[in-house]
Length: 222
Image (cartoon, rainbow, N blue to C red; front, side):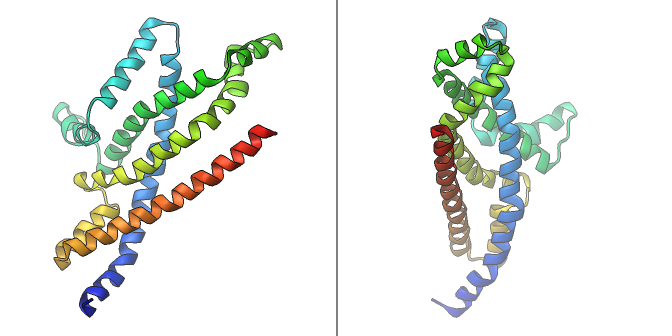
């Protein structure tokens, strides 16, 4: 390999990694946390016997799952200003990613709650627990174990999807790669280097997922 090209790879690695650690990962974590909050609320609405509330949740999930994430991102950042709502790049990205995660994770959480045997609800009622307390103390902890693998996969996908935020000028890993590539004109090399860093992030997260699942297995076993 040409020495100049190798020097470029070495010199660009830290800026790309730093952009991932200070931009990509925080963006993914914040969006995922807000997305889970939205997802839990939507999942509970989906399970509601009230047809209006259930219908609202169904409509939300349908909109999110039926439209591309890129379109959702552009609607918030470029579309809202048309009605007088101007949102900065970072908040726009967080809103779009959170809403997207909420739509997909809601079905995961709903399925996890439904997977808990009805006898658990009945046992909770027998000892005098209210529906809300039963949900928090009995049902959700059991549903969490079931939902960890798919939700972990959702988070890993979100880490990669944050690259779309570069299109609304959010400085994260891929945005930094674009800047370095435009300056050096070595697009293939820099983009491959960015891909490797994304891959490293996903490997670390996958390992963390495995550790979390094992700990939950031990918790459930006890």
